[in-house]
Image (tube, rainbow, N blue to C red; front, side, top):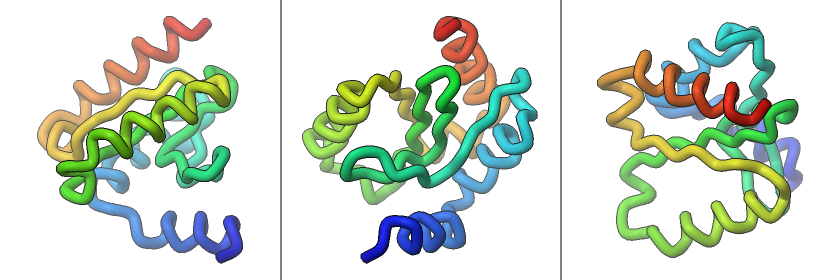
Length: 112
C-alpha cells in the first residue's frame, strides 16, 4: 500500500488517546514546537513527530499488549534514524493528558 495513503488512513482512524494528545500538540500549542502525526520513518509510521527536536511520541493501546519485543525493535530502528522515542500507554494519556504534555515538554527542552 502507498505510504502516503496509509498515513492518511491512520490519521483518519485515530484512537481517542491520539485525538486527545493531538489536541495538545497540533498547531505548535506545546511550547511552539511543530508536530506531525502518522509520519512514515523507515518501515514504520510514527504516531507523533517533532522533526526539529528529533522526538517521536508513541501511544500504546491494547494492540501493543504482549508485543514488547516488536515495540522494542521498532524503538531501536527509530533511534537509529536519529530520533528519541517517548512511549505512553493510551490510558495514561486519557487519564492525565496534562501529565503527558509535561513529560513531552520536558523531553523537548532536553533535546535543545
